Image (tube, rainbow, N blue to C red; front, side, top):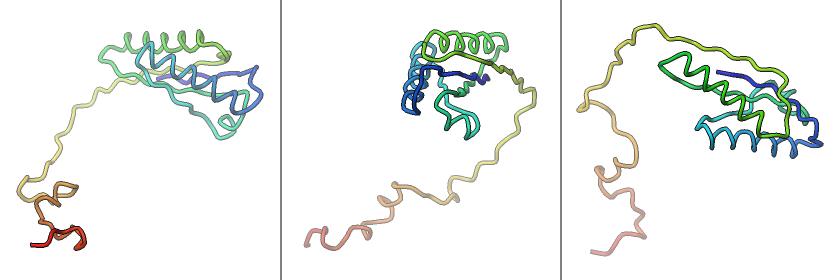
Amino acid sequence: MARISLLLADARSLKDKRMVIRRIKDRVRERLGVFVSEVGSPEIKDSWNRGELGAAVASSDRQKALALIDEVVRVAMSAGGAEITAIAKDAITFDGEPSPVATPDPGTADRTGSADKAVAGDDWIPAAWREDP
């Protein structure tokens, strides 16, 4: 995962900032298939000349994940409109064994959702909509 700190020197309003941030996010998503989100404290989010972006990737290979994060930074830098002032990167390895998940018996599980109406009958239909027999 990465946190990218930005300086938007040419932005004169939050609208200008949002346009630059959106361009960076869209370019990274189009070129790499990685979603980037605006992150940071409320002070940074409300500032029109500073911003922070966050990106996270998952991979079975730590080096590939870090290489993809580096590529995210490169694409963000090439998008223009903002200067990258700081980058924080970290890679987390999950070494724990997965634990089993208990699933309810299908015959005893409570059903919810729209499919129940079809099973329950037509008493949910308003009287005005029903056809006369």
